[in-house]
Amino acid sequence: MKHSVLSMMLLAASLFTLMSCNKTDYISPDKENEVENLKLIKTFSDNGFKVELFKSSGQLVVGYNKIFLRLTDKSGNYISNASVNWLPMMTMNMNGMIKSHSCPFSGITKTANKQTLFEGYIVFVMASNEPGDSWNLKINFTAGGQTIDINDKVNVVSTISQFQKLYTSVTGNDGMTYMLAFVEPANPRVGINDFVAGLFYKGENGDFPIAGNYKIKVDSRMPGMGNHSAMGNEDMIQGSDGLYHGKVGFSMTGSWVINMILQNSSGEVVKGESITETNPESSLNFKLEF
Image (cartoon, rainbow, N blue to C red; front, side, top):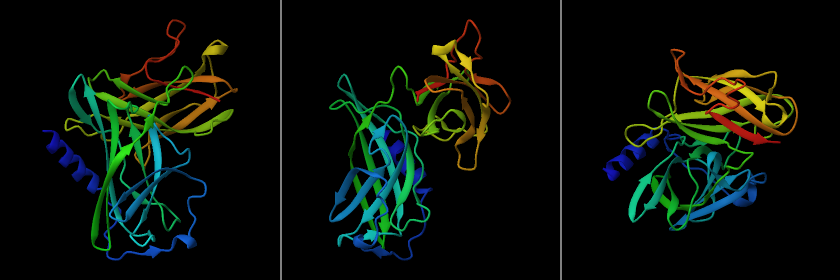
């Protein structure tokens, strides 16, 4: 069963293939420096080929991760035209029983206005905990008629603390498991901020599709200051990128809870509650401090 689930997820990932590779362009490393504002996470290598993973913070975390990839051929040249797929898998040792699962992830596309970079996102749902629990990332790319399969472990750290929660998993009133990942604002500011999040659900085949046609109501509150609200919050709706977009307001710096209510296409509440004097926090929320 495990192998069939893996096969189905790999097939699904292949639907996100960047492009057919009728030709492959190779770019000399000394002519391109497109990662100067990114930090290297890890380098995968196999038979002379390399895949470098980059992120602005240089660290993979529980929740949303926008990841950039750079491919290198045996001669050390960057591959600028390729079909790229990936599959993250967590292996867990539960009292001697080995279990595995994946997590939400996007397809990989060419980064706009960059010759050597590809990009996508992965929403890791738990941290690595060696040696018991570990994430493995399988990367497959085809360039110049040759297909390369590379896989290795990657380290994922927890981001949850008293003042920060940028990922949550909940069971909805409909019995489905939902995953909500904070995307923006990466650098919150006082005032009205663009608010972006990814919403996914656990599928029957071990996959994690994007949850479509929902609405997320937003109510930002400051618990340390009488749980007061802020102006400028706007409901989140799904955009063309599959993510959910709205507005969130912050009236001052400090610790904030972004309370949310998830509604389906019929307007029924799937998860979350309104804030009242007796209910200071929704069961569906993000927390951040700035």
